[in-house]
Image (cartoon, rainbow, N blue to C red; front, side, top):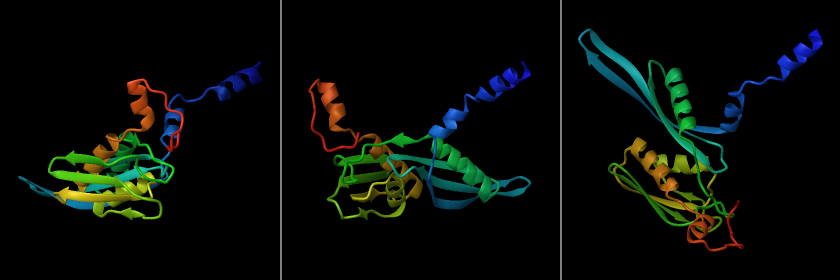
Amino acid sequence: MNSDLSKITTIKKNPRHGLNQSRKITQERIIQISRVIKVTKGGKKLSVRVLVVVGDGKGKVGVGIAKGDDIHSALKKAKNDGIKNLIKLPITKSLSIPHLVYGQFKACKVLLRPSIEGSGVVAGGAIRSVIEITGIKNIIAKQLGSSNLMNNARATIIAFNNLTTPFEIAKKRGIPLENCFFKK
């Protein structure tokens, strides 16, 4: 009888365990580390702000930002924030995006265009980091407006949110779509 109870207790699983497995992140990249100084009555307080991009290289990406007393704690918080904000985006068979898309966050504007196979990632700064973490290999990106790294990363995420697939458009319109060049 005791052996039956031990089997039951070993079979029970933590319900949160499945959540951690679905959030597997294989890549992370630090975009910016900056020191933040707060002047108070008692003196100056130094903290660190970290901007991180996390993803799996297969179409999931998230941007996280956090502050902490040291780099290690701020990096850990930023990584968790990026995991909370993961988005899934459609990628074509040629490892590009389906169509031209714009993204805007505050004064930063980002233009993302699909490119032919073999052209590589033509982008710079924070936009390049976000694109490479997603697993996209052929894309042309242009940063317009401000050159703020944090706002450019967020504008890129907004542009990725604006992407749609032919399946989604056909479903909205009620049209059947059999042949498509996208990964399902």
